[in-house]
Image (tube, rainbow, N blue to C red):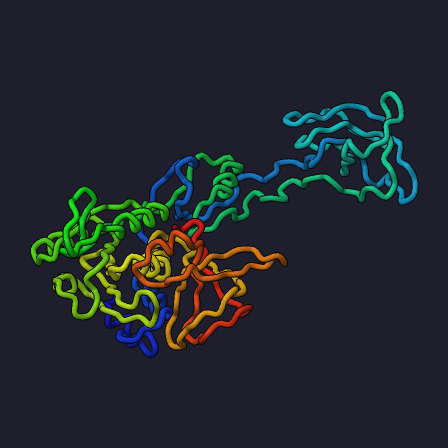
Length: 422
């Protein structure tokens, strides 16, 4: 296990007093590792879990050539470019039961969607396109089909023995359905990540406490709880810890004993009149950063015992932004996921945005579809790091990268969408 100093030495230009957003994610990728423990879960319990082993298909899907349509199956070699093809209907093939006969020249079989293609057939004409020709006969119009049309081939989705899902895949509803299509009742996944969280500060009120001058109700606790739950973590809620050395030491020690990761909010800014930073230093191997970003900037990262520590700023929006930009990708990596970084969409700015080069800015934005079908983004107004309502009004973060300057109307910007995260 490498120390914070050893990891920092591997990063070119590492400066904890002016760290770029990219350098933060590079550092965290070297700091964290997937949890080793795995468990077997049923498909109904597998949603959003992370596969611990590759899944190799034990069967072919579909298991037989079958019809993609309700219609009539026949040998497509009989089709002629400019002539009506008239065929005798010699039977009916139903889904779930193979038709036992065979189809010869000039013959066809009425077939249902999903039914096995009878011997001697390779093409299906949809029933709405045929021309009836009296009892037991029908005709296929010319220039309607090519041989092989409307037939699903055995194994065209998955072939027996081929990889179906790779280790590290986060199981979506579609992936759960795919696993079920292979006849598998359960899968091996990484165990759920255990994350302990608490807010710090004498100025923080828990819900139910009466208001007092200079104090604010704790929103971060509930925001972070929701972010972790949506990620699929097992959350250990430790409430609010006062600025008292004994209480802080007990909270950090308890969290490190119970959890894979610890998240705190507050107490990491320069000059704050509390004991949080001192206790982090006493108990763990911790780095304190000033990140070239807005909002956010102060952040602590390291280890206390075997738990990874993320010390986030105290302002509500800064907590959410640093979580989405840095903590969420790190936690996904700890969960064993190979897909850790959120995709960035391209949108056109609907307004000018002031931006200083030399820092990454995460502006709260509203992304909509323009009349021409392209995506456009505008900010939600006041971008103060304490304006929590702006996160509710937005549906994504407009990510203005380190080297970017001012943005003009129509300029292309990157957007990190909230869907699935918050």
